[in-house]
Length: 463
Image (cartoon, rainbow, N blue to C red):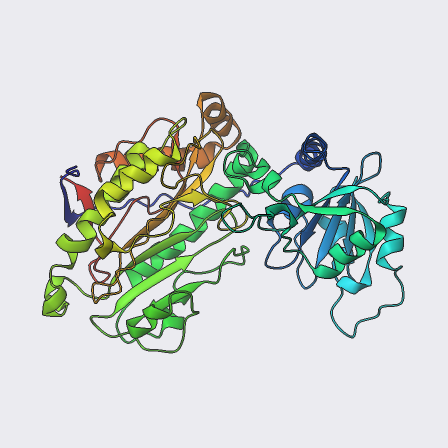
């Protein structure tokens, strides 16, 4: 199927601005989430629910309590008829009191503390769990950060990714412990796959800062800079990240997920940046050149061979995504353009995003999962050519919002709503991308793809 006619041309990218006021999640929302988690657990046949978190795997715990472990681990215990109780270590004690809802009780469990810190002021885990109502014979749902399917094992509910000592203790008490993470993360039914107006406003706030940082890198990177100096242009302001800040150049781009280094950039280098803040991720890739004349002759056709079909795929993604669309439809729309093995697109061409960079994805071959209002999604089409053509990347986030949700966002967050409408207008008028009414772009460089970073005002657009 032929794609839209696209070209590389001069594009005027507006300044969409940065937020002045930071949105917040009301305490009542956390209370409602805990109540909903209890109900879902009961409906799934669990007698109690435990939610584990650590520095890397915090999203499900933070979703329920606003508490994200910093140095330690933590455990939320939800037993019917008992208060929600958060077990934290020494250094989490004060932080938990500052961020967790008042109804969530704190309990010191020093085994979660760092090695060699005081250990003598908390009770042993079996006693703590017993006091919280955990009894022999209970079926316990354990929530970590990943669940498994029949494709991987004949017993997916028995595969647990939380620490063994927690599971061993519960089993020693006489409980049956099963993986219940899909209650939160399943792409069709998980609690965290749809969001309310407040949560989406929080994500837009992060996405605006993160994408603005990437914009500054695109427009400011020069040969002779180190990778550290190039990434410094992003102006990170302390908003928490959901992935390691990434800037790679030259042969180091083969490392894919490595951190930046002191390597100095040279004319002709392949370059890539990714900046993920809670609720967002923005990525761009290309070459540090002014135009095709600066490329090696063997890849002087970089734009027509790779970037054009890639942008056609991204354009198809943007114009297909919407409420009620199946994951299969979106997958097929993309792979019509980049399905050839040359492109090396093997991962899902898009996924759900939340506090963590990747929740799960309804977008896969033959997926029956349908997109819903409240979803926050990343366009994430990643060519991995494994050739001198390197890659192209235009990863940005959008939200899907029905008319009711759009009205609420506009009423409660008019500043964010203005940015969203300006981005939609830019995508339509400057890039030729027609979004459905429910698609709300969160990036300050929405669908903006300059393949040559020394000519950042030249970007892909529809003819």
